[in-house]
Image 1 (cartoon, helix red, strand yellow):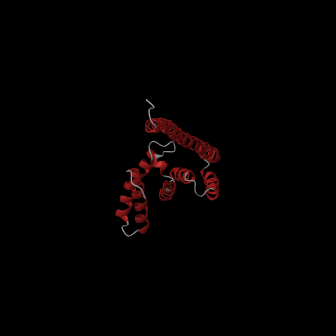
Image 2: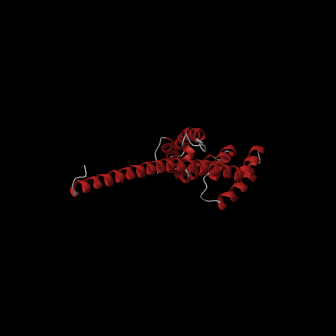
Image 3: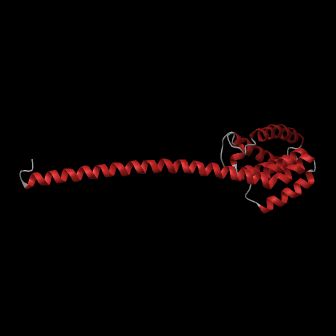
Length: 180
């Protein structure tokens, strides 16, 4: 078996090759495990961030919700205006403002609020999102298309109707899956 130096070198190289291959296989399995762990950690982090965001939204806007349910809409709008100025990148305030304005009969302003909210966060038109207000927005779009058609027939030169129609069409496209 180990007759001359060539045989000894071949056997030594074979042993080194086997050790190297098993080391590489062991490291690759650890890397694959860590990738799986990293992917599950990202999913967990995303879920925790969503829950924390939902709790923050509920905490921030709870006084407005209470005022709205009590029927004190002007005070709710004032409080909401303060929150929107304090958190300008948060879409929930705009969506809530749209809901209150619809209840008060201010349709065009409500559409503007919904558009502002959806532009800030598209989760409000996503049916799978916990923030989804898809049904309300769909109802708003359906009602808006009817209302604007009636109003446009009575005053075709009204430029504010064109702006309202554009905003409703924006919401309609977002409901259909379009993006900005």
